[in-house]
Image (cartoon, rainbow, N blue to C red):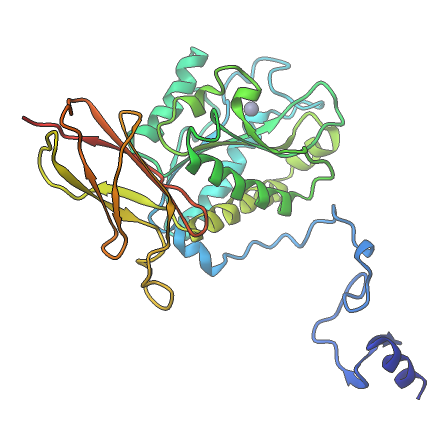
Length: 366
Ligand SMILES: [Zn+2]
């Protein structure tokens, strides 16, 4: 009788391991460890308590199939330098970067993504540091990759520092697709690494660090992001980074971020008009929102936000007509058209995702 009274008052109650909800006795479906989730107050849980080390693949990760991703484990080689990119007890950043990238490759390959690594061993790609960085970006450009992801762990003189930052190149206009990918990855790392500190704005332009930005991002002609998931210079974090299970957690965080990024659609454009083009001619560009060609319910209507369409010819704005029913954009080329001519076509889909490769080189003929 007493338990019924209590249950009636609070709506749900736990007494002696027996659950009462709305006056009905309820059997717990799963045994509960720690605070009871039916009654625990928001402050009953510690944010930094990591969930079970289990790494299931979500169904939406299927959208990564066929997506070309370059993983760039930062640094490598130069292990002979005593204090070069090392944690307080000597853990090398290059080694952790590689382990995380290798775990991430496993996840990505499991769902059919096309993965390329800038390095697979503890080596540098060129003796000259600038050449080393240029080679990493060049690999992504040659494919071209749908995303270049450089994996790093941060270092600071202040041992207490330990937060996540995700970097894109230049201004917010330089590569919308880059900063969008960075945002998905940032939120996934926040969720899975459970760090206590955070930056007021953890999505960072590389020009906040160096005037010309980071070479690997600046030299990439494809969407490019550099992740500093946490600080190897922080003693507690360094201990975690020695643990391959923790490295796998980080790889899983990147993987889920990439899966969510792909689920949001990866818009693409291509020239529909065949052969050479000349001044005064109308050309058609195929617009793929990355979503509407998926089969099933919700796949029939264009998911392009028309107010976001941007067309530029060699940097100058150009008028256009969107024909979304046909998924086409019609552009009349100016009479003065001369080679080289780059047509930039960008838009956002309903998830706010921009075109991965917005620059089309026009084959200008006579
Ligand atoms: Zn680094």
